[in-house]
Amino acid sequence: MKKGIAPGQALQPRLQAGVKTDSLEIAVHLDGSVGTPGPAQSKAIANLNEEINRCWSGIEPMQHPIDDNLESLKTQCIGQAIEIGVDGRQDGEMGHEPNPALTDTSQHKPDDHAPLRLGLMASGNGSNFEAVARAIEAGSLNAVIKLLVVNNPGCGAQKRAERLGIPCSVVNHRQLTNRESLDRELVRQFQAADVEAIVMAGWMRIVTSVLIAGFPDRLVNIHPSLLPSFRGLDAIGQALAAGVKVSGCTVHLVTEDLDAGPIVAQSAVPVLPGDDNASLAERIHEQEHRLLPMALTELALRWRQG
Ligand code: GRF
Image (cartoon, rainbow, N blue to C red; front, side):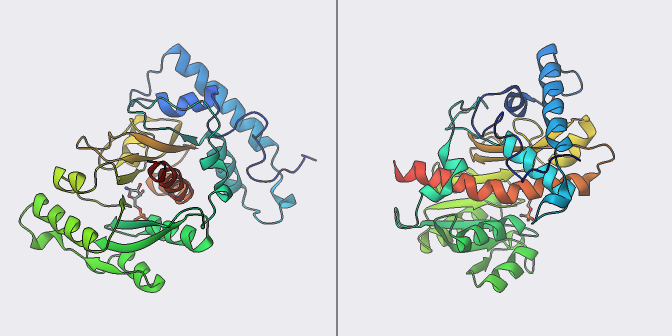
């Protein structure tokens, strides 16, 4: 019988967050030209597959007391193994030192600092918004959501805010003349709510310099690909069309170039045979819900330290 292992323990002896490995390099060197990888990339991908297979082959789901879902367990192990944190690097280069902020949030006790005053923006379902709210509720993210702004009346995010008792405002872009006036209204509302930083958690509008200048270096986005691969709309569809074997999600700071600001953190997932948009999106979302609160913890620490 295979030996049972707990989620997150499987790869720890070999792979740790922020430690340089071939697998970690894959996550940051995929550049969208997948399908024609160079020899180094091919070797790295083969190494990653080997690591993943080694990890998966040791998993005996029935021996795990909490989660007997093998797929979820696999994803969790892989996500934890490949997740990386990067300190303000513009070029996707990764940090090679262990990053305690991403691996042990317990060291940031809620009393250490005042909670980070967050504003969130969402256009659709709002599962990332809720993940941030839940992390705050659970005490793993020392923050408070002062305001959620949605641009689609009645969207899932708005309903979640109502259920969670979080202040929510609807700014319908259809009633504003252009992108700048939408962003001016956002700045006005977030400033009135005394927000320190803004998270675009599924905001489906292109933002302008008005919003970026209103919260310089404090505007955070989550994107469903391993940037710099697959910027822009339908990143998951783009990844599937390119035939990549690894995809994931990225938390980054927002600059005027779409999905090209400094990378804060990434998490990778495998693209499995037979995956479609829905199945890959589900796997990526699962990682997004872990990654975004952790990245905000990392950013809060950075911002607090000035
Ligand atoms: C996420 O996949 C995020 O990366 C992208 O939009 C999606 C939002 O999902 N920017 P949800 O609304 O948070 O469920």
